[in-house]
Image (cartoon, rainbow, N blue to C red):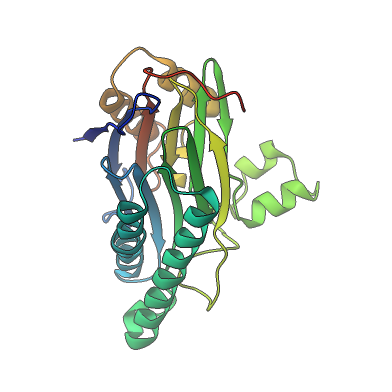
Length: 269
């Protein structure tokens, strides 16, 4: 069942944010190595897709979510929604560094967890901007008016091959190496969180998802569902259902955030 919430930032020029989220094990895997969380009061959404033998994937993704909620969430609560973007990015990278160290050390301490790691996509939603950070192939999309845009670029072998012109996007979709990421949390001593800041307009809809959704649902299907005049929880349920209908080969996770309509849009794009 989807979880949902709403946050209202104080001030006449602020945007309220609606949230909904859903995770599902899919049709093939017995366990769910994805983890999701959102905090309406802070405007924070986090999604992690774990990897590793035994229960390693679940442990890594769960640790990433819990540690970021604790460290970066605490910083956000203190700094407030209008903190300078540079300060937000520094705090977010510091939280990721802490989570990376903890996951790496847990893998060293427990042989069954050795080599575990997780992808990550996190978004900090403010009154007029969103800061999106990601590691690996978990994604963030934005629906603005009638245009769906992928805001993140996968850290994956396939993406590197596409960028180099070695294969086409169509060939990548059929590749057996779709799940090989080039960057993950908890694998190496240092990991860079790729971060970008985007201005927000009323009505913008943001989708954070694991590759269990993006690999099973075509972009045109994502666009069709996100554009529908239904609630966020219904959208999340429908997206997961389509991924399962298309095979459900992996765990499927969705976090949706929609900007309210009570303020004028920013002039920047």
